[in-house]
Image 1 (cartoon, rainbow, N blue to C red):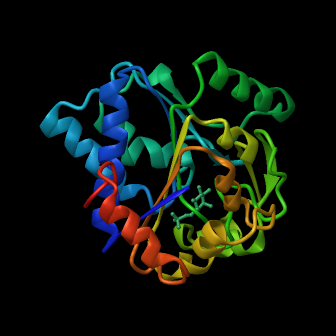
Image 2 (cartoon, rainbow, N blue to C red; image 1 turned 180 degrees about the vertical axis):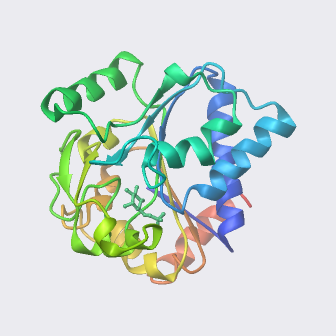
Length: 260
Ligand code: GLP
């Protein structure tokens, strides 16, 4: 796991966008793993700008989203389908049949989940997976206690997650209790991983992910087992790291380290 720290949200978004653009420039038909939530919004904005101003091309790209709330149709404004369309897909030249997002409305989860896993494999596997982190250390909707080898499945959300995500809904009772999510094992199979975090409320989860033991109680700590996971943090999200000096030293001295 490599940790990079930049002053603020704009900088981490720009660093992440440059890393994704490098992947696309090297492999125009790359498979991207995408995340929702407020964290990757700046990254999507910057990728849209690169598409508009610099010709970053998504024509051959395939995407797989991490998760979706159960019970929300793609037209529901709180669904992750809607979020992705509004904040990213509508603004780039991606082919609609190259977009995969778990279904929130399938009547057959038992068939859907293995199908989703198979599609990822058939498309060649995920080249770069974008992740945020929940304040309880979750990735996608893999809540504390999730098996570190879990696959795409139906998951009951933790109360903390429902509370955190209620800010997007009119009232807390509107937040769905279930989601379909890629598993931790699915995520770990990506060729590379890019986790972004910003803000003070992520600092404790970030410190446990990076410097704590690998444990299913902090699902993001499983990234320690991945050979190519980059963690990009703003100042506030990095504030509880004990080895911060070392990460900054590496960042200054490593020629390939991303810079803001
Ligand atoms: C949700 C998503 C996660 C995301 C997390 C953090 O629970 N399923 O993929 O990382 O929220 O969200 P935010 O970026 O809004 O803090």
